Image (cartoon, rainbow, N blue to C red):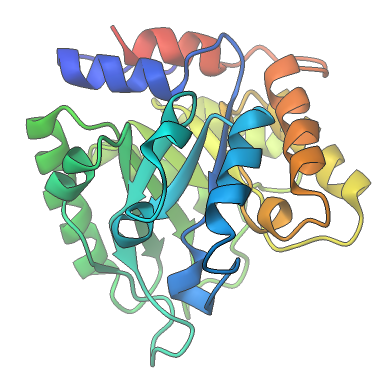
Length: 277
């Protein structure tokens, strides 16, 4: 069972806003504009976020500068996660993630969580781990929940979806102070369940690269939820969809409705209660 102990009042409040229901957590990362370039038109971001909110997503992940262009009313029923690290596809080392914002900026924006990205196996792994430790300390001071995107990724990683490597990444995040970890789906219910069981904090799975077949994406999300994972973070397969509203609702129904068989592992219902205890 995922348990977070000694959470302060501010962190409890934010975690309850981030995961308010008794179902799974569905986040839509939209931090890709730094990595790969514009993901929507300059005046289209509000429309996309409004659709995402209206159709059942629990939160979006944005960089602090981009969040400034959105109406605060959009976050009445939608959580904001401010991403603090970045890299671009033009960098000499695309696996290197550097801090580009501080926890205090997430606090100023009224965020419900902050997030950082760490690539285990990268050439700059040690610096990324050190940055994570410092961010975790600041999050603790400010009562800010911390989402860590922890992936096996780098020149020494032959198979990023190796369950042992994914479990290692998830537990590194937990050990260094994360409240929730986002990592790769291992490809099967059984192997992902082992990752989830190994980790003392809620595990959510990344949605991955865009897929041409919606049925394949939905099947993967169902399997992720069957594994006992706390939820999913699906970005490109949402904001690049032909019908963003319909895709968001489809994923939300799977994650929140739990339209699948359960394995006996922790889910966001228990995680949400434990996170706030």
